Image (cartoon, rainbow, N blue to C red; front, side):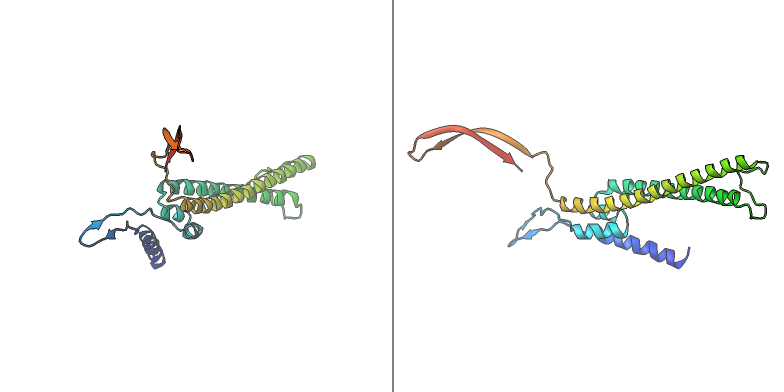
Length: 198
């Protein structure tokens, strides 16, 4: 293993170690230590920057570890289709160039057996060009998909950091309770009170 790879692995390990080093704060009084749970806050700019540099790092920073495989699955799928469609595009483009150009010293493509008349050759070159154009379109769509997944994981990390301390516990509820209040003339009035727990 080369030194560059070792240093890269070491730097990535140190980067992720620094991200996970946050701890809860405590409030100290005279002789007593009262533990106060301060809701953690995440910096959206940091999350966006981490995700922009290393895909999934913003999700790691936000402690949304389950999203990291989804990010890499999306990027990996888009990369697979980019490479596969590019390979087929170049294959059909080369075949079209070889079969269309008659001044190429007798070179023919893998799809041409050499026994085709002019009409069949024209039909073959039209098909090769059509396939090359189709694979080129699919390759471009794959690039767009890759960029979209990359941008979405940055956006997800930013929004997740904004909402990190938002309370989504089961205690969120509304209670309807009877109440008694007094008017300005000190006359009791009964009513309903809506109580929201956040």
